[in-house]
Image 1 (cartoon, rainbow over the protein chains, first blue to last red):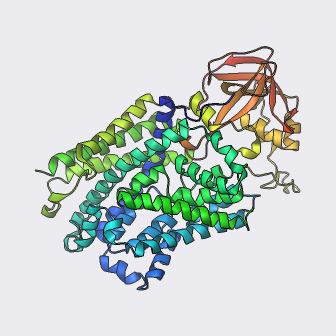
Image 2: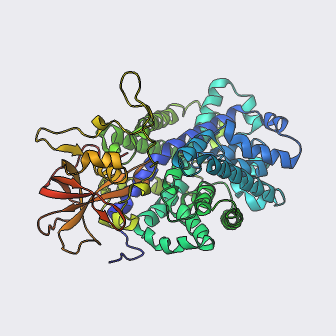
Image 3: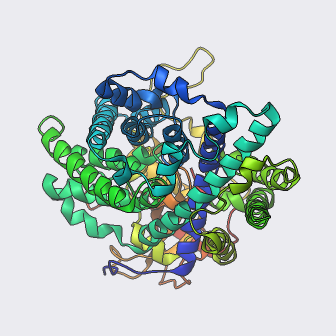
Length: 309
Length: 269
């Protein structure tokens, strides 16, 4: 007896939806509070002074920022939104956003633990290395794009005009008012991002509860099918990058490269993230990013199948 | 004045979320949704949201003039407010606090220990520590999983029997011993030629219910049993590990199968 490929249950959906919200909200709140502090207390000139002038090096540095400032994929969007407004180049911000959920100590440790006995050291190195490489590629790709094609109009205004709470507005204010300003900015970001998070959590919960995951199993036999299948599963399940390795390790029927694709693609793009990204980036850019990441990670993993059976 | 109404609305949304998060934590409902490691974040977030909600109102008079053009709900005014409130309220009302049969079936049951998230093959036992305890990282101390209840049955979890099926030493500890194990009823969809078997499932969780994987052992009874799917059952019987489909499979030969209340900890970790 086999179940249909799609069967929806409202109680199951509500349960999964609520658990995603309860798990993700604290991290979004942390990210938005941090974004408020960045908005009011981080001087713009500091960002431009610290970053290398060379664009390539600046993007690479963005890809490594997660080692120092680890953020999960839910919380990072409000942070990069404010960092962009504070002068962080969009290319570096994209590299930070894509890499930070993977290239950080927590994800490294969880990946190592999940793949014990399955070449944990090699697998963890490959995940972090590939995550960094793809993130830098993403950042470099944005270098040649007009900023208006990447950022939403409201975000673009805050960058080009200094925004309502820009440098001139904040630096002259006394500390208590800056604190209030930080709170207001943080709350505004929280409400904005939560709108997209709720939509994304809803869509992800529909698929993670209603879609029969066995439909993917026959695709595990061939790398060319297994890799896109696992990336699709990662996109549908919308797992947290700190624990997704434990789930990936259980797909025993799938080749290691397919699991690697799952672990690199998932934290960079999934149903929930596609909506959260829409809080900062244009829809066209989010769609192009999703397709680009899918193709690039897929091709790279297919190439890696030579060394990772 | 233009900023005041949206500011009140923002405060209200934060208040709602703060109350809900605090409610989930204080009522204990959070245990049905998240791994214990995440519970503390829920209550901290709830308190922070409540404080932010109050602060938004308290700071109203001291708002600097340049903030008068703050963009609350810039994603879409009333639509945002509805989206931020209605789904969470509806889900809180509708969510049963556990998955039903549809999600269990769609996720597929784990009945092989190597498919369990986080599983790693136990290392060969090393020499015991000087105090007689087992060396860290080697096989599990049997006293941890061989606790007997008042009726003389080993109080086992489904995951213990699944582990035992995959490990010769642990299997020997359980083989042909009386066990009592609880879980949710799910009909056997395969490997049930005589119609007297069913699955006893529990949810295994890494972070939250969204990543839950149903793990299942087989129960063999005297006749066909027909409970509603996902009914909580307490099974007493004998643990066996016959070789089926080329590997040891945990099968409890049931002496009694009775309906029971859900356990306090709805997940296995």
